[in-house]
Length: 193
Image (cartoon, rainbow, N blue to C red; front, top):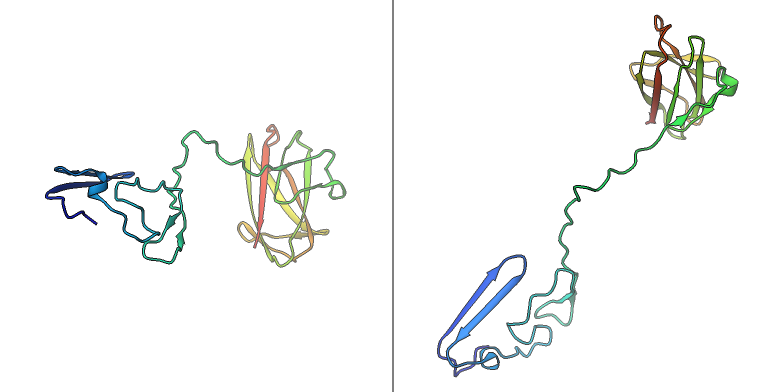
Protein backbone atom coordinates (compact mmCIF):
# COMPACT_ATOMS: atom_id res chain seq x y z
CA UNK A 1 0.00 0.00 0.00
CA UNK A 2 1.49 3.41 -0.92
CA UNK A 3 1.51 6.00 1.87
CA UNK A 4 -0.71 9.06 1.34
CA UNK A 5 2.11 11.60 1.65
CA UNK A 6 3.99 10.19 -1.35
CA UNK A 7 3.42 12.57 -4.23
CA UNK A 8 5.26 10.95 -7.12
CA UNK A 9 6.92 7.57 -7.43
CA UNK A 10 8.83 5.68 -10.01
CA UNK A 11 8.86 1.88 -9.74
CA UNK A 12 10.92 -0.30 -12.04
CA UNK A 13 10.50 -4.06 -12.03
CA UNK A 14 12.82 -6.16 -14.16
CA UNK A 15 12.54 -9.91 -14.67
CA UNK A 16 15.68 -11.90 -15.18
CA UNK A 17 17.02 -15.02 -13.45
CA UNK A 18 15.95 -13.28 -10.22
CA UNK A 19 13.22 -10.64 -9.82
CA UNK A 20 14.58 -7.19 -9.11
CA UNK A 21 12.37 -4.33 -7.93
CA UNK A 22 13.57 -0.73 -7.63
CA UNK A 23 11.57 2.22 -6.36
CA UNK A 24 12.34 5.93 -6.26
CA UNK A 25 10.02 8.57 -4.84
CA UNK A 26 10.60 12.21 -4.00
CA UNK A 27 10.88 12.85 -0.27
CA UNK A 28 9.93 9.35 0.86
CA UNK A 29 11.86 6.58 2.61
CA UNK A 30 11.38 2.82 2.49
CA UNK A 31 8.91 2.92 5.39
CA UNK A 32 6.87 5.58 3.60
CA UNK A 33 6.87 3.80 0.25
CA UNK A 34 5.70 0.37 1.29
CA UNK A 35 3.71 -0.77 4.26
CA UNK A 36 2.91 -4.34 5.25
CA UNK A 37 -0.27 -5.72 3.73
CA UNK A 38 -1.56 -7.07 7.01
CA UNK A 39 -1.69 -10.57 5.50
CA UNK A 40 0.86 -12.79 7.32
CA UNK A 41 1.27 -14.94 4.22
CA UNK A 42 2.60 -12.07 2.10
CA UNK A 43 6.05 -10.47 2.51
CA UNK A 44 6.16 -7.38 4.73
CA UNK A 45 7.19 -5.01 1.95
CA UNK A 46 7.79 -5.01 -1.78
CA UNK A 47 11.54 -4.58 -1.43
CA UNK A 48 11.94 -8.10 0.05
CA UNK A 49 14.11 -10.12 -2.27
CA UNK A 50 12.47 -12.80 -4.37
CA UNK A 51 12.63 -16.24 -2.74
CA UNK A 52 15.48 -18.41 -3.88
CA UNK A 53 14.53 -21.14 -6.38
CA UNK A 54 14.78 -23.80 -3.67
CA UNK A 55 12.91 -21.90 -0.93
CA UNK A 56 9.34 -22.74 0.06
CA UNK A 57 6.84 -19.95 -0.53
CA UNK A 58 3.56 -19.38 1.29
CA UNK A 59 0.68 -19.00 -1.14
CA UNK A 60 -0.71 -15.41 -1.11
CA UNK A 61 -4.28 -15.10 0.20
CA UNK A 62 -4.24 -18.65 1.56
CA UNK A 63 -4.53 -19.88 5.10
CA UNK A 64 -0.83 -20.68 5.40
CA UNK A 65 -0.64 -23.20 2.54
CA UNK A 66 2.96 -23.74 1.47
CA UNK A 67 3.82 -24.07 -2.19
CA UNK A 68 6.51 -26.61 -3.11
CA UNK A 69 10.00 -25.23 -3.77
CA UNK A 70 10.69 -24.04 -7.29
CA UNK A 71 13.29 -26.10 -9.06
CA UNK A 72 15.20 -25.32 -12.18
CA UNK A 73 16.12 -28.20 -14.51
CA UNK A 74 19.75 -29.18 -14.15
CA UNK A 75 21.57 -28.95 -17.47
CA UNK A 76 23.60 -32.04 -18.37
CA UNK A 77 27.31 -31.76 -17.67
CA UNK A 78 29.37 -31.94 -20.84
CA UNK A 79 32.33 -33.65 -19.20
CA UNK A 80 30.23 -36.21 -17.31
CA UNK A 81 31.14 -39.79 -18.29
CA UNK A 82 28.57 -42.05 -19.92
CA UNK A 83 26.94 -44.58 -17.60
CA UNK A 84 28.72 -47.92 -17.73
CA UNK A 85 27.32 -50.37 -20.22
CA UNK A 86 26.48 -53.93 -19.25
CA UNK A 87 29.50 -56.13 -19.74
CA UNK A 88 29.48 -59.53 -21.35
CA UNK A 89 30.25 -62.78 -19.61
CA UNK A 90 33.58 -63.99 -21.02
CA UNK A 91 33.82 -67.59 -22.14
CA UNK A 92 35.54 -69.97 -19.74
CA UNK A 93 37.66 -72.67 -21.35
CA UNK A 94 37.26 -75.52 -21.75
CA UNK A 95 33.81 -74.97 -23.21
CA UNK A 96 34.11 -77.02 -26.39
CA UNK A 97 31.06 -79.15 -25.58
CA UNK A 98 27.53 -78.57 -24.31
CA UNK A 99 28.26 -80.11 -20.90
CA UNK A 100 30.87 -77.41 -20.15
CA UNK A 101 29.06 -74.42 -21.66
CA UNK A 102 29.74 -71.05 -20.04
CA UNK A 103 26.59 -69.84 -18.25
CA UNK A 104 25.54 -66.26 -19.06
CA UNK A 105 22.45 -64.09 -18.66
CA UNK A 106 22.22 -61.72 -21.66
CA UNK A 107 25.72 -61.26 -23.13
CA UNK A 108 28.47 -63.77 -23.97
CA UNK A 109 31.87 -62.97 -25.49
CA UNK A 110 35.06 -64.75 -26.43
CA UNK A 111 37.58 -65.61 -29.10
CA UNK A 112 37.91 -68.51 -31.47
CA UNK A 113 41.48 -69.44 -30.58
CA UNK A 114 42.12 -72.06 -33.28
CA UNK A 115 40.49 -73.52 -36.37
CA UNK A 116 39.08 -76.39 -34.26
CA UNK A 117 37.88 -74.21 -31.34
CA UNK A 118 34.14 -74.38 -30.63
CA UNK A 119 32.65 -72.25 -27.83
CA UNK A 120 29.39 -72.98 -26.03
CA UNK A 121 27.32 -70.65 -23.86
CA UNK A 122 24.14 -71.41 -21.92
CA UNK A 123 21.30 -69.12 -20.83
CA UNK A 124 17.83 -69.69 -19.38
CA UNK A 125 14.74 -67.99 -20.78
CA UNK A 126 12.94 -65.94 -18.09
CA UNK A 127 9.41 -66.93 -17.07
CA UNK A 128 6.72 -65.44 -19.30
CA UNK A 129 9.08 -64.78 -22.26
CA UNK A 130 8.49 -66.65 -25.52
CA UNK A 131 10.97 -65.07 -27.92
CA UNK A 132 14.65 -64.24 -27.86
CA UNK A 133 16.20 -61.59 -30.06
CA UNK A 134 19.92 -62.01 -30.65
CA UNK A 135 22.71 -59.92 -32.12
CA UNK A 136 26.31 -60.97 -32.67
CA UNK A 137 29.23 -58.60 -33.20
CA UNK A 138 32.42 -60.10 -34.57
CA UNK A 139 35.89 -58.74 -35.31
CA UNK A 140 38.85 -60.27 -37.10
CA UNK A 141 36.80 -62.78 -39.07
CA UNK A 142 33.37 -64.37 -39.16
CA UNK A 143 31.78 -66.90 -36.84
CA UNK A 144 28.73 -69.11 -37.21
CA UNK A 145 26.17 -69.59 -34.46
CA UNK A 146 23.72 -72.41 -33.72
CA UNK A 147 21.13 -72.53 -30.94
CA UNK A 148 19.98 -75.69 -29.17
CA UNK A 149 17.14 -76.62 -26.82
CA UNK A 150 18.63 -79.67 -25.14
CA UNK A 151 20.12 -81.67 -28.04
CA UNK A 152 17.67 -80.30 -30.63
CA UNK A 153 18.85 -77.52 -32.97
CA UNK A 154 16.54 -74.49 -33.03
CA UNK A 155 16.19 -72.53 -36.26
CA UNK A 156 16.06 -68.73 -35.98
CA UNK A 157 13.66 -66.62 -38.02
CA UNK A 158 15.90 -63.66 -38.88
CA UNK A 159 17.30 -62.51 -35.54
CA UNK A 160 14.54 -64.06 -33.42
CA UNK A 161 13.87 -67.52 -32.02
CA UNK A 162 10.62 -68.80 -30.50
CA UNK A 163 11.45 -70.33 -27.13
CA UNK A 164 9.89 -72.06 -24.13
CA UNK A 165 9.81 -69.91 -20.94
CA UNK A 166 12.04 -71.17 -18.11
CA UNK A 167 14.00 -73.56 -20.35
CA UNK A 168 17.80 -73.47 -20.76
CA UNK A 169 19.20 -72.93 -24.27
CA UNK A 170 22.73 -73.40 -25.57
CA UNK A 171 24.52 -71.43 -28.28
CA UNK A 172 27.44 -72.88 -30.22
CA UNK A 173 29.95 -70.48 -31.80
CA UNK A 174 32.69 -71.57 -34.21
CA UNK A 175 34.58 -70.30 -37.25
CA UNK A 176 32.42 -69.73 -40.30
CA UNK A 177 33.29 -71.75 -43.41
CA UNK A 178 36.29 -70.35 -45.23
CA UNK A 179 37.67 -68.53 -42.14
CA UNK A 180 40.40 -71.12 -41.36
CA UNK A 181 43.24 -68.61 -40.89
CA UNK A 182 41.27 -66.03 -38.90
CA UNK A 183 40.88 -65.89 -35.10
CA UNK A 184 37.81 -63.71 -34.61
CA UNK A 185 36.47 -62.31 -31.37
CA UNK A 186 32.72 -62.16 -30.82
CA UNK A 187 30.03 -60.81 -28.53
CA UNK A 188 26.55 -62.33 -28.54
CA UNK A 189 23.73 -60.33 -26.94
CA UNK A 190 20.29 -61.82 -26.29
CA UNK A 191 17.14 -60.07 -25.11
CA UNK A 192 13.76 -61.57 -24.28
CA UNK A 193 10.18 -60.68 -25.13
